[in-house]
Length: 181
Figure (cartoon, helix red, strand yellow):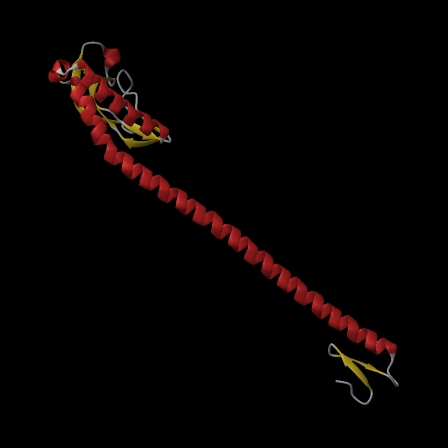
């Protein structure tokens, strides 16, 4: 609202009489500095908020991926006994007596299971003939061997072990050679 000496615009009074231009310029510079300081403060706050949002999204994405991997791993661990059941059935003497058409059908289903597991990055641990590795193998028994080079070598696999993305999901149950001089 205008007063007796001049008009007021944005908190700055322009006086008509007796005011020095230098004084008014000084006021304008102070006001400009204050506006610049506020702008910098708001910009910094906005940039921090934007960075926080990006970080929160990244964290949420990581948590979501971990949850998905855990759920996938849990399901695969539940399926592995079914795969074991197939493999054990194939070893049975009675399996050879089953009609060939049935055998083919059952093997087809088994291969589908294996295919799905491979699609989910599950791979069997190669055990027989390898050096015993406690991270990948679970020693079920020791077997006497005549050759010293077979000492500590996996002789037989009792149950397959599996890895998922390089991490052991289930160690292989094995028999390990033990050389006795």
